[in-house]
Amino acid sequence: MKNRLHYFIYRGFLSLLLTVFFTRATYAQYLTLGNENVNVEVGLNFGPTFFLGDLGGHRGYGSTFVKDLNLPLTKLMKGVFVSVQPNDWLAFRVAAQYTYVAGRDVIINTTGTNELYRKFRNLDFKSNIWEAYSAIEIFPIMLLKQGDEDYQPKLRPYVFGGVGVFHFNPQGSLTDVNGNKTWHYLEPLHTEGQGFAEYPTRKPYSLTQLNVPMGGGLKYLLFDNVNLAIELLYRKTFTDYIDDVSTTYIDPNLFNKYLSAADANIAIPIHDKSSGVYTRTDPGLQRGNPKNNDAYFSLLFKLGLRLTGNYENDYNKRASSHVRCPARF
Image (cartoon, rainbow, N blue to C red; front, side, top):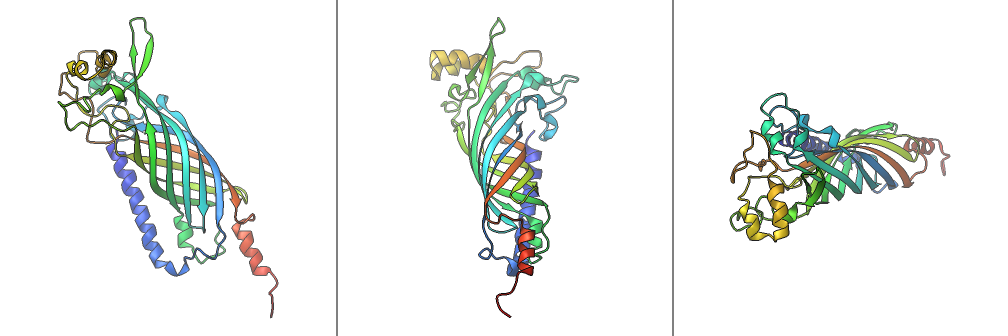
């Protein structure tokens, strides 16, 4: 569900960014930062977040693309941002936001046989995510039009990329014989033997990690000091454990060896909840896919308010400068 989206977005973003910077060299004689007022903008953003991991999906073989997105699990992301724009083509952004991701094997449709292993694996997870990042925004068309003071469109496409930090903490569920469901934090349970001597390459994962936010959007100047935008925000991560599923099943007896009795009593049933004839849960058999890290992306709607800089729009500002009376003849 992950690798192809990683490839297309990552390669597409790099191609756009390289094009912009090569163009920047060509138009270097027009690019100055010191002769324009700096605009400071604050705003809100919200929109759905989609998870790309090992759990859930749809009928057929598991996909590495958006085919396996489970829309019923989508939750709303909310955040704030501050943007500093020294000129028309460049901006610096910092943002903080909260979102939620989840995955459940049980919701997979079963119209064939290729998806049965994932469905009968029967794992689930949910996690809150808090994140903060900084990024550089580039408006390619405005960059190409440097020097053309009359070109001031209301609709401005942009691309961006940066670095961020995010915190997650996955939980999995257990259901008792009476149908009562309880949720348990998974990282302390070492469900795939992380940190156990028998699995020296499986290190405990950190719940706070770096990511690489990137994407693009369309910004519309609604009024002089108000703008709207729609944006695709993708995060490349460096962990495969946002959903606590990555590699293979382990010997359940190891939980009693390394965990407290209370934790072992949870870890044993929660690491293997499989049911049905397609179960494959012997130690060493596949539980997840370690070849691709987890990722998540959001489709955001943004509202921005300019706090400083020119209170009139750029077009009116330049027009007024053309018709003002000269200081001397």
